[in-house]
Amino acid sequence: MSERRALVVRGGWEGHAPVEATELFLPFLRDNGYEVRVEESPEVYADAEVLGATDLIVQSVTMSEISHDQLKGLRAAIAAGTGMAGWHGGIADSYRNNSDYLQLIGGQFATHPSKEPSLCCGAQEDNYLKYTVEITDLGRKHPVTEGLEDFELDTEQYWVLHDDLIDVLATTTHPVQPYHPWHRPITSPAVWTRLWGEGRIMVATPGHSVDILEDANVRTIMERGMLWATRTVSA
Image (tube, rainbow, N blue to C red):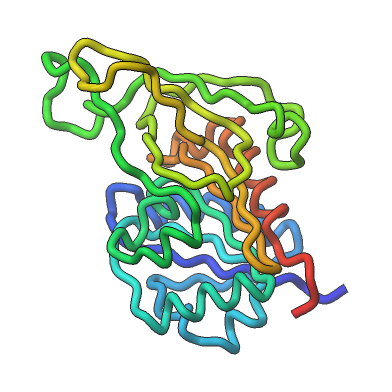
C-alpha cells in the first residue's frame, strides 16, 4: 500500500498557537502511515500537483486571507477527493472575507459569548465558559464520535452560523443570560462533517488552546476525524 500524504497548513492569528497545536498531531499522523508536509501559509493551495497528491489537509489558519488561485485550488482538490480537517478558528474562522471558503466549510464562527461583564478583565479568559458538548443521535453512530458520551469543557463556546448541508455529530447550547440580548437558548454545531464532491471535511469547534486539544474527548474527535476525512477515492 502506498503511503498516505498529509498536508498541514498553519498560520494566521497567533492566539490560537497554530504551530504548537498542529505539532500535537504530527506524531499521530506519522504513526498512522502518513507522509507529512508542513506549510506556514495557504500559498500551497495554488499548487495543483501538490494538492492532487494530498490525501488529507489539516488546516490551522485563523482569520488571515486567501487568494483567488489558492481557494480555487483548495476547492478543486477537495471536490476531487482530498480530505480536510481542522478545529476551532483554524478552520471555522479562516478567511472571513471569502464567501466561497465559507460555503466550502459549511459553518462559520460568529462569536463566543463572554462571562458576566463584571467578571471580565480584558483577557482571553473573559470568554471561557463551562459548557457541554452533546453528541447527537447521528454522532452516536458516526465513526468520528461513536462511543463518546456528552462531555464538559471550560473554554470558548463557539456560536456558529451554518447551513443544512452539514451532518452534525455534536452540538452545544448557549443559554439565556440577563446580560445577553438573545431571548431563547441557541444551539450551535460543535462537531460536523460535510461531503463536498468526492471529498470529506470534518470540523470541531473546541480547540482554542493546546490544553483543550489535549482533552481526551477533543483529541479523540480530531484524530478520528482526520482518519475519516482522508481521501477515499484514488487520486
